Amino acid sequence: MTDATEREVEAFRRFLQLLPHGEGIELILLKAHLLIEEQVRQIIKERLSNPSALDDARIECYQAICMAQAFFPPDFQPWLWDGLKKLNKIRNDIAHNVEPVGLEDRIDHLVTAYPFGYHCADDDKLARFEISMWCLFTTVSELVEQNNRVISTSRVQ
Image (cartoon, rainbow, N blue to C red; front, side, top):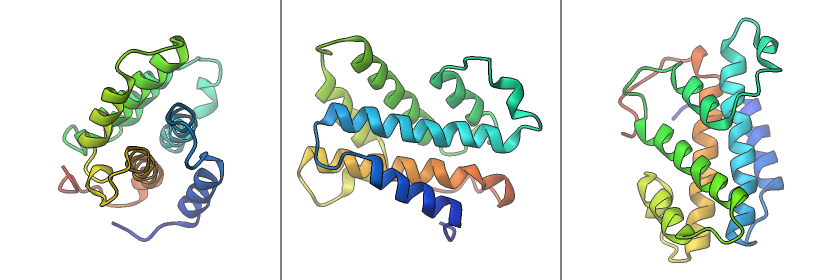
């Protein structure tokens, strides 16, 4: 783990300010997804010579995740990209279904598949989910400026 940059600290402050702590899991998921997606898109923006060329491209979140992943070695944090894709799938299910089936199980699977959130001492599923979203956000946010740092594929795998 590297020292957080000023941009990372400000991004996390904004994340904490806008995430509806302790609210319903669906609202937390929707807000966390939006805030994490901003960071994924920032990864792309930081690495392109002309990011404004994509302004009208209507790139979906899943496509943005895949594009951001392409900037890193193939074995770089596979759990991260898988978690982002799972989060996006769950978000889409909530956005397009009034009563999504199996939501709690899919959220539990997302939390347990992520290396940080599930291992907290709190047995409260909502708290574990929130912590997982915090960790997912900070991991993605750290990658925004990763092109200026040495990339290590040995980090949590």
